[in-house]
Amino acid sequence: MKKHNYSAGPCILPQEVFEKSAQAILDFNQSGLSILEISHRSKDFVAVMEEARALVLELLGLEGKGYQALFLHGGASLEFLMVPYNLMKVNGKAAYLDTGTWASGAIKEAKHFGETLVVASSKSENYNHIPKEYTIPSDADYFHCTSNNTIFGTQMKSFPTTKIPMICDMSSDIFSRVLDFTQFDLIYAGAQKNMGPAGATLVVVKEDILGKTGRDIPNMLNYQQHIDKESMYNTPPVFPIYVSLLTLQWLKNLGGIAAIEKINNQKATLLYSEIDRNPYFKGTAAVEDRSNMNATFLLVDETHKDVFDAMWKEAGISGLNGHRSVGGYRASMYNALPLESVQVLVDVMQAFEQKMNS
Ligand SMILES: *Cc1c(COP(=O)(O)O)cnc(C)c1O
Image (cartoon, rainbow, N blue to C red; front, side, top):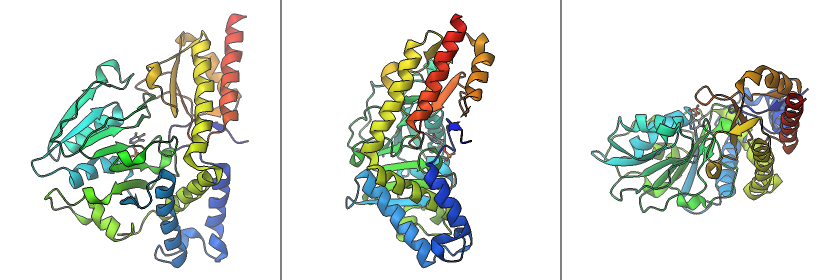
C-alpha cells in the first residue's frame, strides 16, 4: 500500500508521474526504446528539454521577460558556488541573509570568491524565525536569500526590495505559492524537493545580469555557456528532466501555481491548527514565519516518543522524523502530498491525545 510520505527530500511526486515515468523506462513515446537508452540529442529528448524549459517560465509567469530556464547537474549545493562565480565581481562583495543550514552553506561557498556580508542571521536562536530588520548595501553585487528553510520550518512570506540583483534558493518551495517572480534575477532549486527526482537542478536566470564580473569562468560552471548550448552543454540528466517535465505538466493541468497554493494552504492550516490546539504538541518556528512546506513540531513530553512513533507508523505514515538539528518531527507537505495524508496525521495526533488522556 502507498505510504503517506512526509519525506523532506527526495520526496513524494504525483502518482501519475510515477506511472508515466515507469512506462517511459519501458517504452518511451512508443518508440520501441527506453528513455534511458536514447541520445539526449534525439528529436524526442530535445522536445522534452524544450517543453520543460518553456513550461518552467510559463508557470512562473516569466515568459518573454528576459529569463532563461536551465536544467543543470550538481544540486542546489553547486549553485552555492556558481552564483558567486558568475555574479560576484573580482574584488566585489555580496550580501547574504542567513536563515538556516542551507543559507549558511551558500555563504560558506561565496567566501571563496570575495567579501561576503551577512546582513542578518537568526542562528543564535537556532534559526527559529526569519530576520526582518536589515539593510542591503546598494554597492553589493547581489543579495542572496533562501525562500524556505527546509530544516527549520520557516519561510519568507515577503521579500525585501533592492536595486541590486536578488538571488533566491527556492529548492523547497518553488512552484508551491504565487509570487511575483520578476522580483528575482536568479532562482535555483534542486529538483528533488518539489519538482522531480534527485539529479537535476533548475536555474532560472535573467540573462542581462550575466557577463559583468571580469572573471574567467570554466565552461561547466558558466551560466552563459549553458544558455548558449540550450541547457545541453554536456549530457544533461535526461531521466530527472523527463520526470520533472511530467510533474510540471501535472501542475499545469491542475491549474498551475495558484491552484496548488490553495491546496497547500489547506494542508498547512489543517496541520498547524492541530499543533496549536493539541496540548501534547508544540511548534518550533515563529508563528508568522511558519513554512507551508515543512512543518516542524515537538512532543511536549519527549518520553512519549515511542508511543507516538508507533502510532503514526501503524497509520502508514513515513518520513516524519525531524532533522537532527531541530529534533522532534517534520511534516513535509510538498505539492504532491494529498490533503488526505495530512488528515491521517491529524487523526493520529488526536488519537494520541485521547490515549494520553485516558
Ligand atoms: C535540500 C536543499 C539544498 C541542497 O540541495 P542539493 O540538491 O542536495 O544540493 C539547498 N537548499 C535548500 C533550501 C534545500 O532544501
